[in-house]
Image 1 (cartoon, rainbow, N blue to C red):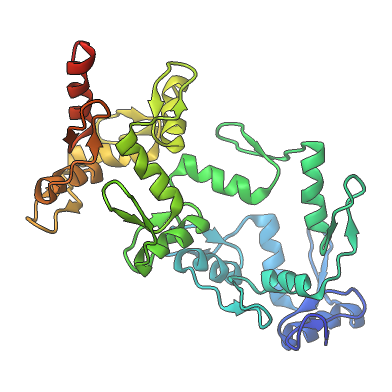
Image 2 (cartoon, one colour; image 1 turned 90 degrees about the horizontal axis):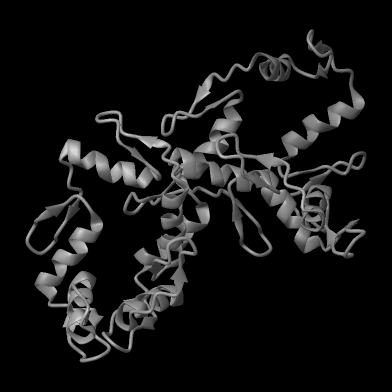
Length: 345
């Protein structure tokens, strides 16, 4: 057992592979010491157990008998389904006993522990940076070479890492596998879910010195302040339209691309984004999922609820920088400014 990786890590002294569980370690050692009697009739590869051969054959047949009851994705091995489900639940049962960091897969924990061991035998011959694993070195070298071997079969965009491609594809599919177990909100990236969970923690240390509103993150306060200042620093280089948020500019640019891959199966109308299709479908279904907790009125869009709530609170976050008059809606401020400029409303 490795002293460097901690007491719960088992190292093979023949091939140096590491394991968290002694049973898996003992099973692995048989590869080096025993004959594998079960042979694949397709490729000739041999296995120690018939169950492993059965799992292997599915690589050739494409059979995936294990299905996720949340998103429907299928897997050839039950253990892969178990790991996949942690995307939905956020469960991270493997914890580093040195720093406390948690992981969804035991292999990720094994890899992480080598950070504490300090050994980095794989060196980049271009910049000299060192890595604990050869796979990390391979990925790193793409920074120097510009290689992007992972291609999106929908739009053709390329990526240097496979997980970046996986995240990107969710733009097309609308898949959001990371669910908040408190409010049910879903996200396409695990990091976004982690950030979102802080909202439920209730801590809001960033305060707007204009209206007093508080935020959990400094970036949120920065974006909010633009409502008061009217600053729109993100400009479309095609039509010149400006936006408060970079994300809104990114969304807007797709309008110029003309691509509309999301289609309504009721009326046939097409949209550039899955979220736009989701909102549109409420026209047909009449769904109004956003409810005012003061008067109970319901709305189909969150933005409509935000504007409505200002009727109750009296909040007027849009302020004219010429005369100081405030408004509850940005469109009202825009019309008002025409009084000062003489432009047609």
